[in-house]
Image (cartoon, rainbow, N blue to C red; front, side, top):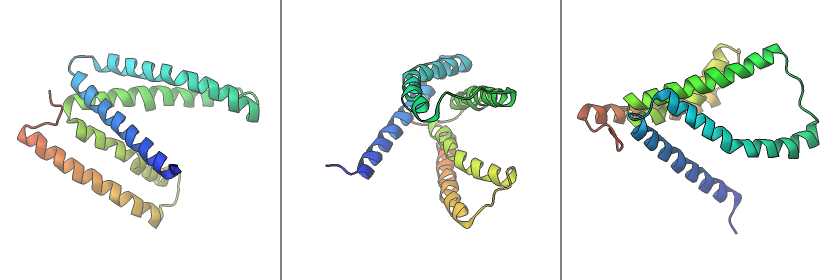
Length: 166
């Protein structure tokens, strides 16, 4: 019988492989397809794949435990629009535009900046306290980004852009 941590580890490795495969495919197809068209199709496809799970979750859990969803007022709708347009559509378009100009390995490192940005924005904007524990967590992340980026610079200078160069 497998332990839970083993199952989680295997699921994480599977998701890592799928994500890496997606980066490579996006890099290979980036020269053939317009960035906005590619972004729109990928967001539509991902949304359609998630829709049945979202509906099932809403009926199975949300209504059973929380009741019907609350009505949304203007600020909440504006927040939702911001997340949908800026934090999703524009961010994905920028991501795929970056894949056109940079090696896939370099662009893949940008995802590691998400927790770093979140912690630093929380400190700067929301007035959260930056703890020693958070700093200790940020240091290996930033070190990994710098080491990975250094390799990206070397391969770009040598003309060996990446395993999936155009």
